[in-house]
Length: 219
Image 1 (cartoon, rainbow, N blue to C red):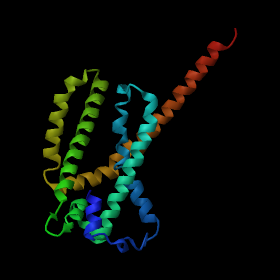
Image 2 (image 1 turned 45 degrees about the vertical axis):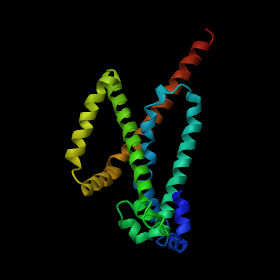
Image 3 (image 1 turned 30 degrees about the vertical axis):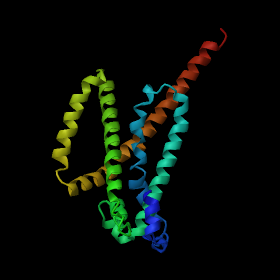
Image 4 (image 1 turned 120 degrees about the horizontal axis):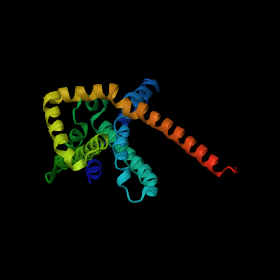
C-alpha cells in the first residue's frame, strides 16, 4: 500500500539512483563486510537457539533460505525507495529515512502523511525482534547454568531494562553504541563463532565416522 501511494504521488525519482557506484566497488565491499553482513544477516544466530525446539528440523533449511531471501528483497526495496524519494544526502543524514520517505506522500486532500503506517510497522516489528532476542538470551543462560528457562526470564528482563537505561540514555548514544557494536561485537557472532562451531562439527563428525568404522571392522 505504501509503495502504491508513493508511485501515485509522483515522489519517486529514479534519476536519484545514478551514478551507480560512483566511487568504485571498494566502499560497497567495505560497508558490506563491516556493517551490512552483521546487521541484519548476522542476527540469524538468534534463530539457531530455537533449533532444539523445532518439531520438523528437515524443513529448517528451506524456511531459513526463504526468510533470508525475502528479508533481503525487502531491505533492497526499502533502500531504493529511500534514495529515489529523498536522495542520497538526506537518506544518509536522516535518523529514520523510511519515515521521512512516506512523509512525502500527499494525494489531494484525502491521503496525507501515511507515515503513521510505517511507524506502527516499525513498532510492531521491533516488539517481535526484541522478544526473539530476549527469548534466545533466556534459553542461552538456562543452557549454560543448567536452569529452566522460565526461571531466567526475570533476571534477563532486569538486565535488559538496566542496560538500556545505563548504556544508551539518549538516541544519539544508542546509535553510536550500535555502530561500535557492529564493528567490534557483531563480528564475533558473524564470523568467529560460526567458523569455530563449523570446525568443531567437522572434528566431531570425523570422530564419529572413525568410531563407526572401527566398530564395523571385522575382528
